[in-house]
Length: 550
Image (cartoon, rainbow, N blue to C red; front, side, top):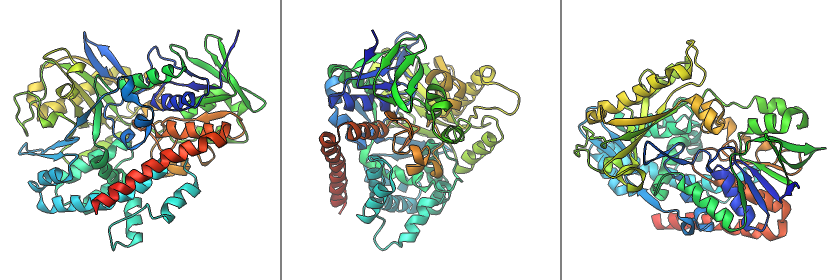
């Protein structure tokens, strides 16, 4: 007999699970179907190499702590424990004479910058003063469907603020400039320009792209949220979500690739697995990539008008990064902060191995020419320094994320052939800063852009699903007619995940927004007040922070 549910969620990534948790909590009988044998999507930890817990997707959790999700779902009751990454970022100077430490505490951060450039220390303090309140307004938009009305409401109520006396047009200019230009005009030292530029680059667009200023400005929010690591690995977030979901009566089916989303006469009927098994529901939420969902699982013949053509033209890009997950005997003993390989503040957060903004720009040039960066910029992460649960006693983990690595290569090579060579290049960057790591790596798992596509369904290796350029953000993400999480012409079909507003990263805002959109559509009188209360709580917290600042 075919099983019937109120809602089926396709894909068990963190946005899909967030959405499912809220729907099940609201009383809707919900099923999550995941194609892999483990829950979590790209927020997942797997045991490798005899006791090492390796994050195989996102590692640092930042933006989710600015949402109500963890609190409202009471994930601490289901085994989730966070460890502070402080300093959340650490930049060793290229000459190894010292480092810039980005602490959650602004004064400590500025004290670190002052050793490099007193002017930049003050410039950074002023930068945070401007961009913090501005991004509190932006964040309020992130926790709602990106309608013009919601965006306009934030502007009219004064949530978008700048420094006192600043001309509104100058604030707008900074938003719409490139983050490379914004950083260059704000800071004088090459160290600050490189550190800020490499952090901003994590969203994907290159330093010269117009409309990306806030990728640097968003950095101000880290002094509010900090960056955190779940004890036991990144996947402990999604494991806790799964336990919460099941405790409320939700059902998870693993190792079950979906073959199609069943649509009849413009109405969703459920899903059919590749095995032929069917599950029925009047509502389906897809956490899969937007193109996979609409062009493969739904099918162009079920989409109205020219929607299929428009979905096919969404810019997925050419990938932009790869990862190497290493088991190691020791921690990096950075020349810029000698520690004898013992845990040190340099190991707590994101280790920014990118000597200059020009170095980063050259990597982009290589990428644009269809070849992996000859000298890649690297983020190193050593969570075993703060979390003893992720490695055997006396051993350590070292995760490396590198940019820029195009999915489609133009020199006749292929990723199955060159992945190990490119992994070696990332490690060579580490060796420049921490020579003790040469020979200390005992095992490694290499994730090329092609691996990311095969494993997680991240088309062309784009971890953000689709490019995070201005014309694919807010009410444009991924297309204006899809931006409110509904699919026009197909009743009961909804989209969530990194393809949707507000984009990629460990955020959960997309899943949160989609859930409340579904609830407004299916239980409007009952759920509107609950959604409004959650959004209001975030607004009140932002107001309290602004009052505290003075």
